[in-house]
Image (cartoon, rainbow, N blue to C red; front, side, top):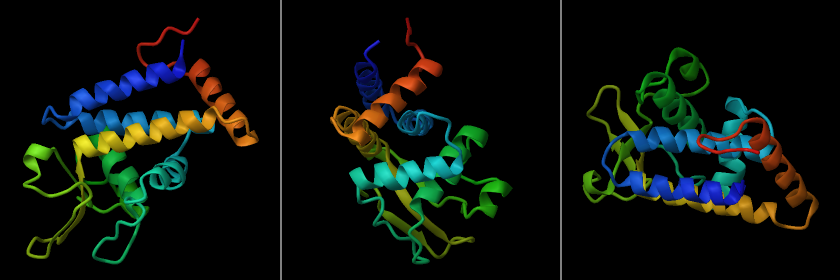
Length: 191
């Protein structure tokens, strides 16, 4: 199996699904990010590992995420992407975090989801504030099509680094192979 080819094909599928207008793309994107994090580590990742992957890889490749600030002044988008986006969607199909997520800083509806056609002209990562709502709305807007393009950039970066003839590149290559062999991705045939 050509691991890089496999993941580039999945990115292509994410691109096709991103314009459909339904919420499923965000579930798929969150699971895809988690698999990328596990490949980068070569081992399972917990909440800390997922957030670390976002901060050190995703936000480095796509710096607009690291510069996002909530009205409170907080720049904890990685925490919100884990507790509200990933866990909220995966565990409860909601953008409301559970009590465990709240204990670790997750805030209900700190992330809003849209597609270009439903975003009312707002850009990806727009800061949405509505003080009239109770509780007040203070959210990052993720536009599906742009979010998927950012995931594509992160995927490209991961594989580009794995090809480098440096200790970090060799370690990453080993981690990717280890994870894929131990936990083959959906639809792959490892022989």
